[in-house]
Amino acid sequence: MNKILFLFFVVGFCFFVDGVIYSFDQTKFQVGHLMYQSKCMYSPNDPSMSQYSTNPSEVRIEGSFVRADPDYIGILQILVSHGDSFDTIGYINEQNNREYCCRESLNSIVDGCALENVGSLIISTNQTNLPPQVLKIQWNDFNQTPYYVDRTFTIEKSGKHILLFSSCLTLTGDVYMTGTVSWRNPYGYLPTDLYHMIELYEALAAGYFVLSLIWITLCYVYYNNQLLPLHYCVVIVTILGVLESIAWYFDSVNFNEIGTRSIFSTVFAAVLSSSKKSLCRSLLLVVYMGYGLLNSDLSVPQHKKAVGFGVFFFILSFINDILRCYSQVVWDKTLTGEFNMLLSIFDVCFFLWLIKEYYSHTANDQRKFKKFSNFLVAYFVMINVTLEFVTFFYFS
Image (cartoon, rainbow, N blue to C red; front, side, top):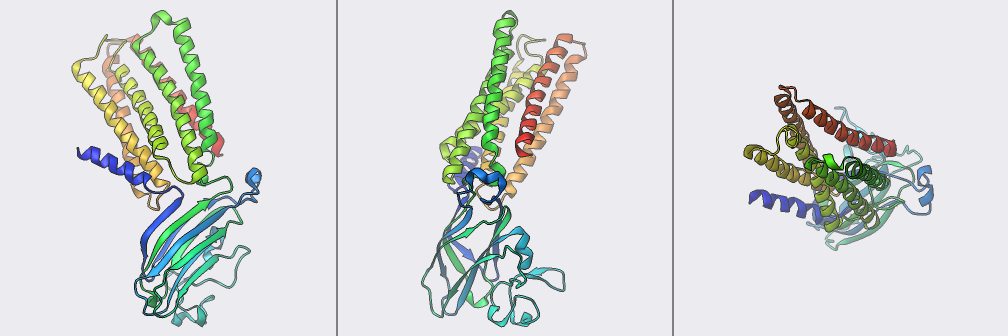
C-alpha cells in the first residue's frame, strides 16, 4: 500500500508542476539569498535556428513581489546573464571566494560597488558586448504594496544563461513571490537538450516499424512451422517500440507548443516504455532459464521469479521515466540522478543473473540453447547499438 501511495505521489508531484514555465506560490526570498537557475538557450540569430529566425527567444518574469516587513526601504534584483558575462558579476575576495553583494566597506575598492550601489549586486563596469540584463525592484519606507512585474529578457546569443534573484539589502527583509518564470526558445518551450528528441522519436518509430515488418515476415513466411512462443513475444516488443516512440513524439510536440506536460500523454508514454523494457528483460530471463528450448514449461519457482522480476522492473522503470520528466520541470534534479543510478545497478545485477542462468544450462553443452540465446542477446544488443547510433547522429 505504501509503495502505491509513493507512486501516486511521484506522478502527482511531477505533473502538477509546469514544464519550463515555473510557478511560484508565495516563494520566500531571504535577505542575502541568491536563487538562480541556468539553462542553455538558442538565439534567433543562431545558424541552426534559421527556420525560426523571426521567433523570439526570451526569459519572461510575470508575477507579484511583496515584503513581509515594510518598515524600511527594500531592494530585490532580477538578473539574466549569458554565461560568458557572468564573471562580471561579483568579485573574488581574499579567501578566493566570490561575493555578490555590494557593502559600504567595498566602496571604491571593488569595481561596480559605488556608494549608490550599496545593498545591490556588484556588476563590473568593464562589460563585454553582452552585459547582464537587470531589473531592480525598490520599495520605499512603509510600503507593503505588491510590486507587479511583467518583464521579458531577450536572448541575443546562444549558450548558457543564468537567471538570478538577489536580495542584498538587509533592511529589505523577506520577499514573497507569486507568479511564473518561463524560458522560451525560438522553436518553442522544449529545453535545448530535448530539442532534437522530436526528430529522434520519428526515426525510432520508423526504425521499429521496419524491424517489426522484417521480423513478422521471417516468422510467418519463412519459419511459420518452427515458431516458439518466444517469437511472438519479440513481435510484441517491436510493436511496443513503435507505439512508445509515437507516444513520446506527441508528448514532446505538446510540451514544445504549450510549455507544460500533459498528464495523460506522458503517463501513457511512460507505461508503454516501461512495458517494453520490462518485457525485453523478462523475455531474456525466461530464455536463459531454458523455456522453449530445453524445457516445455517453467517450474513454479521460475515462473514466480520471471513474473515478479517483470512487475518489479516495470515499477522501477515507470518511476524512473516519471522522475526524468520531473527533472525537466523543477530546479532540483538530485532525486532523479540517484534513482537513475539505482536502476543502473539493478540492471547490472540482472545481467549477472543472466550469466548465472546461462552457465547453469550450458554445462551439458546444449547447442540449441546456446545458439538461440546468443542470437537473442545479439538481437537486443543490435537494437540498443542502433538506438545509440541514432542518438549520436542527431545530437552530434
